[in-house]
Length: 309
Length: 86
Image 1: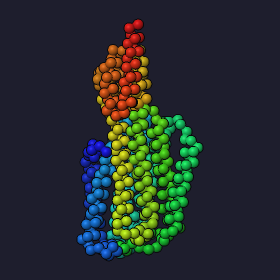
Image 2: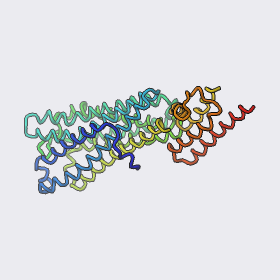
Image 3: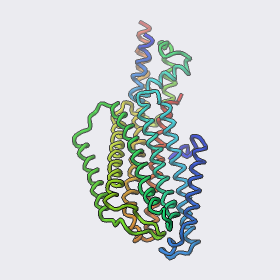
Image 4: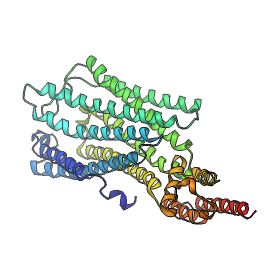
């Protein structure tokens, strides 16, 4: 990976905003209830050292993600007046909302924990569980709309084989997700005293599961369309740059699917050891980071095509 | 004829840069030749293709692609040189 991808790109206030959100996140983590340390038989200092080993990589990942989105948004502005412009603009917006989803995913559990022993705990848990999914629906809808505009530029119909395979993969995801959902209990609380869910299973099915399934359908279709566009668009150098973007989108969407599957199964996470849990978190963060870097690389190559002299 | 030469250069570039080809060629004509794309003449081709070759080398490291690109531009130059000489 070239070092130029790590160079700041875009307005500095965005990085400032990311730093501010990270500071709030880190403070809320460090000040969190001590009961978590009791779960793993750790003293308070050791627990906070472990927490900081997560917080620092998370800051780096967030900054990289912000950077990759700004690089892509810059490319979208460069081609704004071309026939492909609106499509890339939608995709850039979708990536921005996806980043908001990632931030919400990290921040909201900490905020909900602050209401652990108050009357507002259930509304806080409801927001914690539902706001990320709402952001995901917006993000994937925009990515889908952008990808539909792109695919219309290449008049090649997808084969019966690839369409069947795509639907089969989607159905497998849906079955796994719904099975895990029905296997979880809607009651129960975390070590912080925060309930896992604020509403019964029957309500969650429509407010959490159905929107997630729809969002993934849109997201997977978007990846498929961008990938097809990167295969069939004219121009070998242009296609090579687009393939980085398609791979980055696939990694980002894969990350959200894994996260939602695991979050739905939060009670089971309590049974995992600290090392397994740490590895799991690092794996997710790494997938999102790789996705961001791939998008940044694709955006840089596409922008170079538009600017090189 | 000028527009025809421009379109011929764009057609070659489209095989590499797709929808960005027209903007790519027009940008090079404006910047390196200080002309509008429809003012392109046979005599401008050597300088233009030299610049686009150099820039293409920034966009891809694939030697086969670069060689094929350079060969096609050279063929185009020779074609128009032949036409001019006739």
